[in-house]
Length: 137
Image 1 (cartoon, rainbow, N blue to C red):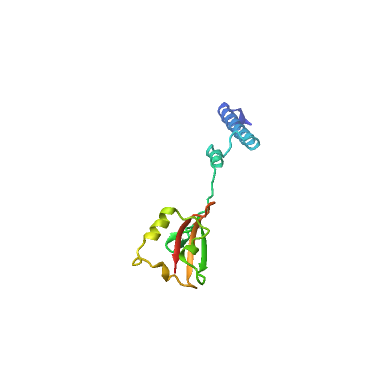
Image 2: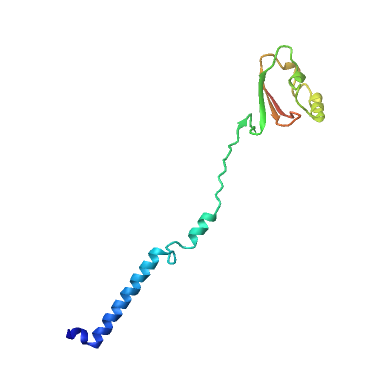
């Protein structure tokens, strides 16, 4: 064992053995603890973000108007029913009633409303049942 008696070889052997022990202890400690974890700080931040899912409601159009928030009433004009009878049960502001009353017959003649014709009322969801539009077909 002349080879081991050489002081230079002894020092190299002890150095390599010491490095091997340090590396082995590092992997042993790393496998048992989370000191040298592979996850970075960013992993905890990703979990802290709140995700909000919202349902997109597409607008529903009827007669060129968005009717998502309106109550739609479709009916036919009955025999001997007048225009004012169509508005019964719904709130129409006095100013609108006055404007309708002052319309000349050349613009629209309310006497031409006939039985079995379809009409649509667009009404708000409030306690007064406010009439937003009347479509006579």
